[in-house]
Length: 348
Ligand SMILES: [Cu+2]
Image 1 (cartoon, helix red, strand yellow):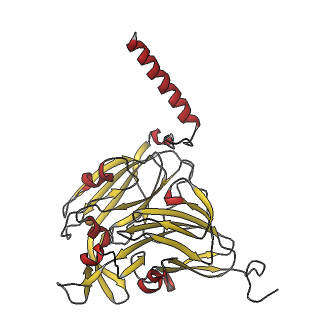
Image 2: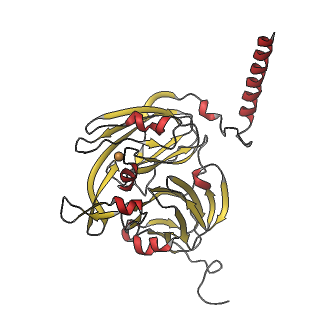
Image 3: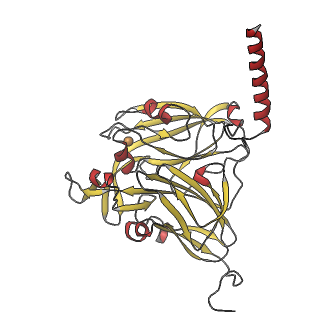
């Protein structure tokens, strides 16, 4: 009798729970915010489109869950950290930040992580979009020349950081091993005119003992959290001059902003603009009319704003010594007609 009663209560609670979760999208504390995640991905696996910053793949739109393959190559390469300054970066796909990955909630994602044969160390990937041990880190730990694979179901919509989690982790991240993965909600994000990918990182450098003219990771500076460079998209000035991102007057701009760290929290701000919408910490809560949004190390934000008048808008970490002395500065160039009702020099 007791067993029957227990079963009945259990069955009733399951049915009730299922009905409830099918009609609500998680407004109650303690409830998981989505039911879409249990939809089955259909069809043959396809290779996901991935892009280098500041570009992002095409929007997901209104489609069902798919099976996607994401291919990443970890490398240890020399690159320019600033004009004329070489640094040994560790990367996903030879770029810092790593490729932008864009999927839909409910998608099943096979991550193929190959560690280039020229690497000295093992690398792996921990995606914050994953529900599972280490975000995939143990499953993908790859020695030089090997490929490791794991598969996950993207259950929670949001903008997530991924990074290498091989020891010493601060060094792997400090050398540039991070990127963003966007999990779009079912139905997709609202279309906008422009989307860009920006990722901040702090870099700690010293002169290489091995090669003249080369900079490498300085562990003491990292432990002291005293970087030489704080950068958008892996190079000082990467978003200035010909690297400026662009929009036209009247367009809505969406920035996918991440912070790889390894240490600093970003106070992300666009001088001369107000964020109409901020997806706080890259999650599902949207707030409005924000001047500066905090982006923790290993975190993100999606910001949206409409540009009303032409000009060059300066993107900064508003901890301003980082912007003006260490490189955390970029520009959005807006072209189009002036609108004196919104902004003009001089009085009435
Ligand atoms: Cu690594």
